[in-house]
Amino acid sequence: MRVLISAILILLLFGCAGKSVEQSSPTPEPTQNLSNDTYMNQPSCMKYCSNQTNDCNGSWSASGNYPNCNCKLVCKEKENISEPVSNQSYQPASDDRSPSEILTDALKKISDDFYSDHQGSFNQKTYSWELSPPPNDGSLSYSSYGDVKFTNKTIKSIQNSGFILFTEKESSTETIYGVAVFYDKTTILDDLSTYDVSYSPVPISKILHKCATYTKDYNIDSNDKWSVTYYFKCNSISDKE
Image 1 (cartoon, rainbow, N blue to C red):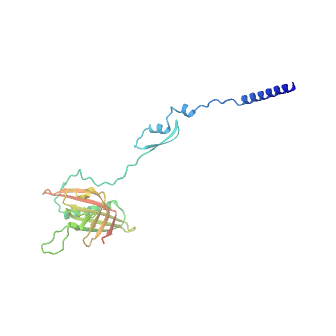
Image 2: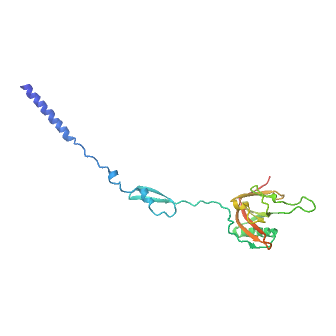
């Protein structure tokens, strides 16, 4: 009998203990998925910013959480592309000056324009070359179109060319402006953004580097003969070896 009573007490004791443990650890309720339920229908900051006004064809940079978004528009800069001067809309001026006279006037214009735009003291040296046919006496004292080359190419219609070297006295900074006259309407220079100009005849024997045309003049004489004058600026000058 004592054994039976002890067994019953032990069973009651373990049963109560198990029930106590089960009540102290209730099954947790499932948590709510805020990411899906709360924000599923709300736009992202990038989507929000992309729908804003874009005045410069740029791209949006977005940060933060909707609706507290920080939108920044990064505009695209226009590329600075060097292009040759257009030759599509020229109007020739009636002009009976010779190529030599055109060159003289062009070099004077370069000098006048330079000093109107620059202050200071400069040394100025002018170089010029002119086409001359072979003389009848058989001497070799003449010049041909091959004496002047543009990026190692000759232009048969060239009549003359020249340039002025301006050197600032204090800093020795050099500035070079040049001109070339052709009996033509267009030349290969119209298709070049930059070019070198080399002069073979003594005493010039110089190379002008990275020249670019900045304006052109078109003329037509009384015999309907066209000429085009190119004005160019160059980055540097060196002696021709």
